[in-house]
Length: 286
Ligand code: ADP
Image (cartoon, rainbow, N blue to C red; front, side, top):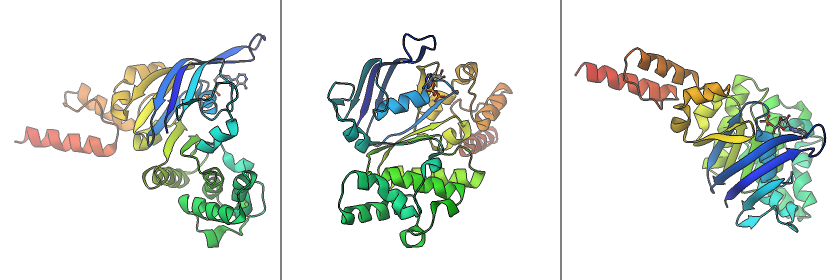
C-alpha cells in the first residue's frame, strides 16, 4: 500500500476573516513498509496533513491516492480508508473510557460489526503487538495504568482495526524518558516485526535521530526538506532557519569539523560520531 499526495492544499474557514492556508503545494510519496518521521514547528501543518491521510479533512485542492484510489474523489467510502490507515491522535489516552482494557480495545472492531470470535482474536493480538499481556491486563481498568501503558492501550485500540499504515501524532508527548523509550521501541517493533508502515509526527530531534528512516520536514504548510536522516540533518542552516535545529551530537560533530577534524557531515547518532572519531584517531596514528 502506498500513499501518494499530489498538490495538496488545505484552507481552514475559507472566505471568513479567520481564513488560514494550512497546507500548500504538498507532494509526497510514501511506500509500503516505510518508517517516516514528520517533523516541523507548531503550526507547520503536520496535524492537518496526517488528517488528510485518513480522510478526516477534505482537501481544498489536490489529490490523495491510497492504494491506487483517489480518496478525494466523490463517493469514496471514508470508513474503508480508515480501515487501511489508522490514526493515533496526541494524548490518545484521554479517549479511553471503558471500565476494562479489553472492552476499550473491543470498541473499534465491534463497530465494524465483526463476530465475537474475531473481536477476541483482534484484541488479544493487538495487546500483544503493543507489549501488554492479554491475561494480565484484560480485566484491569485503563485508568489504573501508568501514562505509557495507557497510551499503549489507546494504540492497541487503533491497531485492532488492522490498518496497514499507522500514523501517530507526537506519541512520546508528556511521557518521562523511560516511557518515551518504551513507546518508541514498541513502535519500532510494530514496524520491524509486524511490517506496519509507520508515519510518526514528532518535534523532538533526538527522537527523530534515533528512529527515523526517512524524514519529511514541514514549514509553513509546505514540505521544506525530505530524505534520510543523514541527508536532512546535514542541512543544519536550513533547519535552524525554520527553528528546528538538529540532534546534539550533530552539533558536536559540526564543532569538531570546524576545529579541523574531518568528521562526516551526516553524523546524527552517538554511535556514528564514535565511529568517526575512532577512524580519525586510527588514521592519525597510522
Ligand atoms: P502542526 O500540527 O504542525 O502544529 P496544524 O496542522 O495544527 O500544525 O496547523 C497548521 C495551521 O493551521 C496553523 O496555523 C493552525 O493555527 C491552523 N489551524 C489548525 N487547525 C485549525 C482549525 N481547526 N481552524 C483554523 N485553523 C486551524
